[in-house]
Picture 1: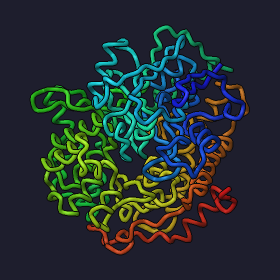
Picture 2: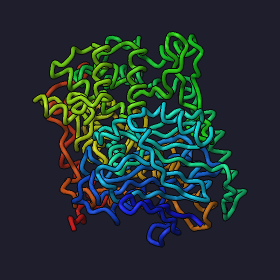
Picture 3: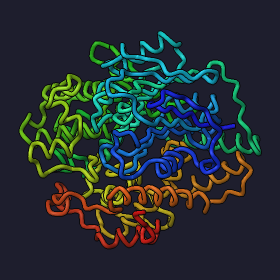
Amino acid sequence: MEKIVRLNMTKREIIEQAMPRTYRNFAGRALTSKIISTEVPASCHPLGQKNKFVIATGMFAGTAFPCSGRISVGGKSPLTGGIKESNAGGTAGWKLSRLGIKAIIIEGLPPKDEDLFLLKLNGDKNELIKAGELRRFGTYKLAKELRNRYGENIGIIAIGPAGEMMLSAAGVAVTDLEGNPCDYAGRGGMGAVLGSKKIKAIIIDDKNSEKEFMFHDRKEFIRISKSVAEKLIGEKKILRKYGTSVEINESNALGYLPTKNFRKGQFDGIDKISGETMHAIIQQRGGMHSAPCMPGCPIGCKQTYLDNKGKYLTSGLEYETIALLGSNCCIDDLDAIAKMARLCDDYGLDTMEMGVAIGVAMEAGLLSFGDADGAISLLEKIHDGTPLGRIIGNGAEVTGKVFGIQRVPAVKGQSLAAYDPRGNKGMGVTYMSSPMGADHTAGCVIPGRTGFDTTKQYNLLEPYGQEELSLDLQIMAAAIDSMGICFFIGLNPDMLHTLADLHRARYGLNTTFDDIVKLGKKVLEMEHRFNLAAGIVPLHHLPDFFEEEPLIPHQTVFNVPFKEIFKAMRKKINISNFSSK
């Protein structure tokens, strides 16, 4: 029997309950958004008594299906003011599933003068443990201490000092297979929500678990899982070699790599920060260029990056991190970028939000573009809790407002991801129309990707058709996020057909491709309804400069017609039926 663990921080009470009937058909992102939509008043303060912090596993967590161990983290976002789901790999999803835990709901607030706590889950006795001695611990020191106390094989979900300070760019760290806290549910400020509940970490100890998973057709489930794994091994060789950093050169060549606070789409120092250069450095220093971020991942797009003395620095140095802390800030030193990524992970910060916030600070003249030492110093101020550090730690939009900067690349309060919308107009539509703010994973438009009509090809520099492509990919992403699966398995109609087959084999239901599509639409509609009740309209404009200032090298502006995006949203996710009630 799948269960929910509820922790009420006002009462200091932990309750295990069977999955309520109204939540039983939901998992992953669908479940976090369903719980938030049902239990959280849209008008509440994100850091207040009525908001809830929710973790949910996917539909196939703990099974043999590849890349199915991601967790979704949900709540009302202190960054966007709307509903938020951010997901992460690591070991937590696998371990929660072995304990039979489908979701964790943390609600209420302790007294203001209360110290920090740990929530320990082990299947026999769930405990709330006082942990004031862990205050201000970075996530690396914290993970080491908790593994010393409770065993090397525990899973950890934690916040750093940024979450304790309730900064809006604070993320939630999840430990990987090596015990490093470098897999992040980074976007939307969910670390601040967990910090408001005074929870420093959730410890998952599954060593005594004997959970057995039920299957309608185990043989068919295993057959599908093996087939997908073999396909991924064959098709994802580039990701396995370079990780997502392979996109640095690609984005630069296509002219939408964010450069100098989104002024240009190409970076003069590209050769110093490319995925190929990073691969060479990793090999030279003896790091790993391929590792899984969760149990059962055959892709292995994660790397281990060592410093110039051969000491571990960080893992999973991804495209978005390199682009936004690197080219966006005109920093061409991979070691400096890796150090900034390590600081963000240790302090508990979203690397994307920090890259854009530092770019805005450079725009304001606090430091010069290209000043790597200054950028590192700025991040260190966040850890120290100085006024300037708190400003930057609250993200790009707050930084822009404080320093009177108009050029702030953000939508719904959240910074843009690492794709300039003038050079990738489909991604621009995602930024404008996703309920999540400017989040590329909500509808990741890249060259060669299609919507539901696979015969249609899209030129990402052309304005027409991008709204249809983006909305189709948003629907697919919402469905895959609800399965708890990494979208690197394939964001396409074929994969949705495979997931329908997999769902039938697991649960014995007559699940069809159309059912998977309906799930994605339902999730988006639910999230947009919550946002509307919170006063956030479904469709936002990009900042003015994207529509007015031509992007180098294409000399194009963002010009997808607003009315066409709105029309596509009405057609595909029925926003015309929304109510603010």
